[in-house]
Amino acid sequence: KLADTANLQLDYKVLTEIERQKSYAALGMFLEIFLFTTVIYSTLILIDKENKTFYRTLTAPVSLRSYMFQNILSFLLVSVIQVTIVFVVLKGLMGIYMGNSAINMYLLFLAASVLAVSLGVAISSLSKSVIQASFIGLFIAFSMGSFGGCMWEHETATALINNIGKFTPVYWIMEGVCKLLK
Image (cartoon, rainbow, N blue to C red):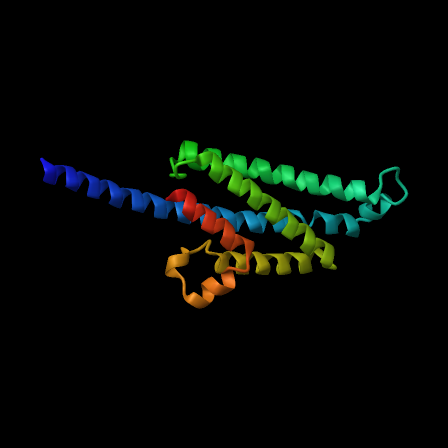
């Protein structure tokens, strides 16, 4: 009887580790795609500049600060909706393991949405055109995702990649994912 119990526990640990690896990969891909989409739709600020909508606010009763605040708030709202829909699909429909606390994982990705929107707005404010912002944003998002551990776990990466990745917020988010999945 004791041997059967030990075998059952061993099988459970192996299955749990496989589910944890699948979850880490799914959440990492989601974070990478999330960074890409947020950078792309935050270029709407540049589109407003090209269409002169941005400059019309100078003559309108709306202040530039209010205009930018409303834009950033709308980007955050879209990000929150995106995170919510993906979590409902991943957890509810696909049954992806979210660790002991799915709410903490959800809150972690809401914090990631603030990061993604901040990155997109910063790139859009420093770029001169939509194409320039798109290329720079996609390059930075891909680099941060690669070094941050979206594509592989930190334990499997080289020391150099991990040391570079520690300077990116994506690394911190994926470290949180790893801790929440254990």
